[in-house]
Image (cartoon, rainbow, N blue to C red; front, side):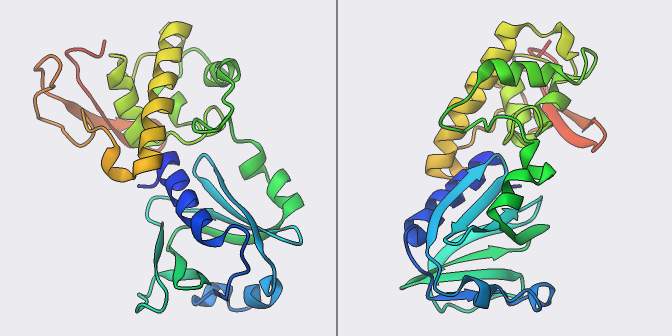
Length: 255
């Protein structure tokens, strides 16, 4: 499931192929984009920037046009040799030279004006990017607490309006790192503890954004029933929040 580190990793790979270049091919194979005329609208335009904010990826072209992508739970970006056989889930192809960048699936893929990309509420209301070059910790703390003192810390960490980029995997691993029960009300979590949570997420997600999915820690996520490496208790799992996202934690050392 793509989280902020996955999106930043994808952005860096796309950037290496596309930044400063005019794509040789822009193709939208799926019927959903048949009437949008992306190849004609983007013809001859160079890619100026490929960047990410939280779980959102942007390919910014000359002429104030922006491809905006959000992969949801199932989408992915891949970079591969140009001309290899395509599967049925390819929604976008951006080819330059011997390589092509493909988006496979995902709920959001759209071409916006730069103005719309700045003001769209889905984007404008995002909190500070946990992997941003500049990260305002105090702003993040205030946003995490804005949902009220009774909201669980696990739910607060998933709120993209508070901090952008942390998903379910990193929520579980971050709470484990600080030995904090993900169901603890955020009003009972000190600023020092929240600082520790955010510092761990920012540090470890940066490693994963650089090295890929294989670098993610796996202390509790999807380890229900196994012994905790820290205290030996059995890791547990159950749904949490309105989305009933499956949360993994150790009842022995996360108190």
